[in-house]
Amino acid sequence: MKSYKQYIKENDAEHQKALNDTGFWGSRGAGCIILAKDTKRILIAHRSASVEQPHTWGTWGGAIDKHETPEDAIHREVQEEAGYYGHLSVVPLMVFSSGSFRYYNFLAIVDKEFHPHLDWETQGYKWCKFGEWPHPLHFGLKGLFNHGPSLETIRKHVS
Image 1 (cartoon, rainbow, N blue to C red):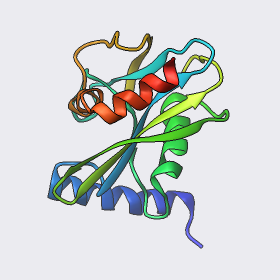
Image 2: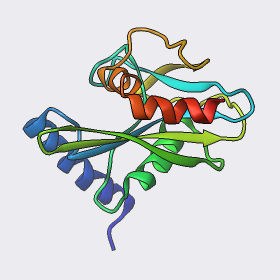
Image 3: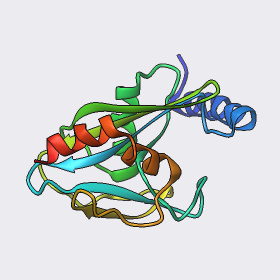
């Protein structure tokens, strides 16, 4: 049986190869914005200088590992990047594609706002009212907010 470190090393090597081939970290990715039921505000991540498209506001997410579904990846990424281990439900939104790369977007719904515990990928965060987005937006989040069906799904859960 492989150790956790071996597993991570294998996935990172695969994700690095995909970055070299496609310009994206991994062959598939998943990300989310987080909606708190208690305030109806949405949590957005401010990307650190250590990642692609630094200093932009984007989703919480990353590459999908071999054994994961997009939904599994969202649960793991929210734990890793935001330090949130509570219950969350996920609602599918737009799937971005570029060549062979796919990025699955979700609305993750939690009961209450929380204070994220950030890792190295994120330098800040903001709880936003619907439509009051910080700038500059990462191109993926901008695309999500310009996708009519996704925006309607988000709006429906906010009202």
